[in-house]
Image (cartoon, rainbow, N blue to C red; front, side):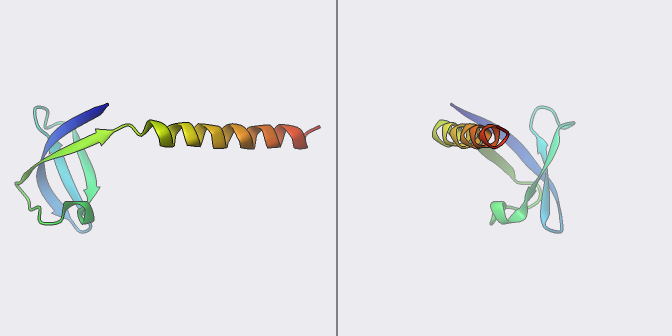
Length: 75
């Protein structure tokens, strides 16, 4: 599942770009400028967010394994 967010680069403050969500400028978020190469203040960008199911499952398995190990140490 992928969600796309459209935002305007409002300003750049040092290493961070301040983005305003298009359609609701009350919503702002910061993004390191290294992810916005070639992007300037006033530019409109689209950011895609994709859930990584495989990585999520791996992380859950790793945590469950650690929990089981900790439970075993308590006995």
